[in-house]
Amino acid sequence: MTRTEIINQLIEDNNYRSYLEIGVYDKKNFNAVKCKFKVGVDPDPKVKATYVMTSDEYFNPKIGKIIPYDLIFIDGLHHADQVLRDINNAISCLSPGGTIVVHDCNPTTEEMQIVPRMQGEWTGDVWKAWQELRATRSDLKMFVYDVDYGVGIIQRGEQELLKTIAKTYAEFDANRKEILNLVEISVPISICIPAFEQYGFGESTLTNLLNSLKDQQGEFEIIVSDNSGNLKEICSKYPKVQYYFNPIKGISENTNFAISKANFEHIKLMYQDDMAYPGMVKEFSKALAIHPWVISQGFAINEKCIKVRPTSPRYTENVIRGKNTIGMPSVCGFKKNNIKFDTNLLTLLDCEFYWQLYNAFGNPYVICKKLIGSRYWDGSTSRKQGNHTDKEWLYLQDKWPQLRS
Image (cartoon, rainbow, N blue to C red; front, side, top):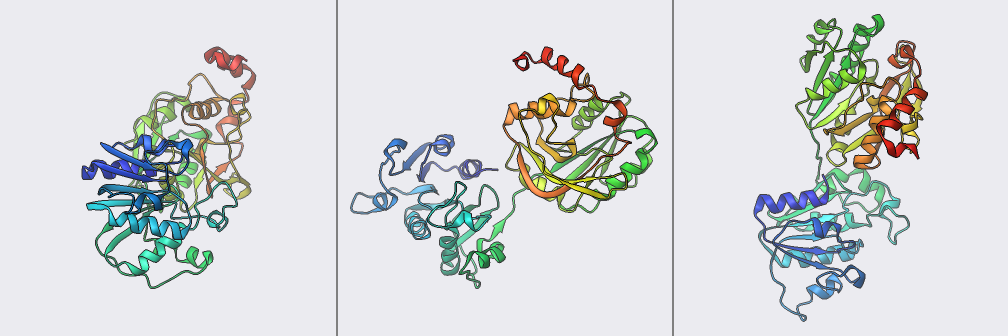
């Protein structure tokens, strides 16, 4: 979920009719906001905001009377003193029952919040202004959604004043949940497992995977699509598992079938010989609330599930040609869509799937935590089937003419 989605949800839920945006920048957010009456304020004449002036000038009563607004979004100069003035001025012209939304409240590194700006990814020290209000204004209700660098919500109400005041970023980092009143946003996920007898190892590999999932925290379901018919008894031992028998053979067909049985809109693929590490569901649920497709770091593991080396998946333009820098589908999660695994492919099925996700959604978001163990061993399907890259590349060029150049 992004700031724009949060703003539009507030407008819809509360039937808001008027909207003010402080700091319009490139107008992407402003243009995407669905409100009957919208006003933007930005001093940059290139932006062509409704009012080309600073927020201090706009709120100056000598210039004119400010109308009340139902929703005010503050995303202007990210210096604590300016943010504090913007919020206080916004409160003075907020309609009864209105909401103030503040962007960039939750920096994730010290460098990100240093003033003056020293890097591209920057929130400024907005958190200091937020902390000041959390410590002094008991007449407000304040919390921050833990998405999109921290989306703060302010409404009239009441709150217990902060007792912990951070003087440094390190102190803020240690107490950020309390200081921001941080609220996590996540989505339920369907963990889809295409399973089969796996050359005699199917029962042991699936058991290992399901054991790694049983203590995961968050809202999720587990879908097992079994095209061997031998794994139903194992699945019956795990209450979260929904078992389906799929008589059609093939990893692509079985994966597509598992996805088709998902009840949730966000899919987390897991191959049965891989495993999940603690926090996997929680981290993917948070990331998929914001991003349409996600990959995570992890470890390559051997046949005994011993960690061999760390993995850092990334998408490159050569993925479609078989240089699979992402790895197993188990590192991947995505919002449900119409993209399918091609049943004519044995080697490049993952690569083509990633390529289509890239074409649909752009680069994947990378979770920089080691959440997945990807097993590289002689019992894997890819090793059993052999390498068909050259033949399948010709097939893909016929299927997708743009790949011929």
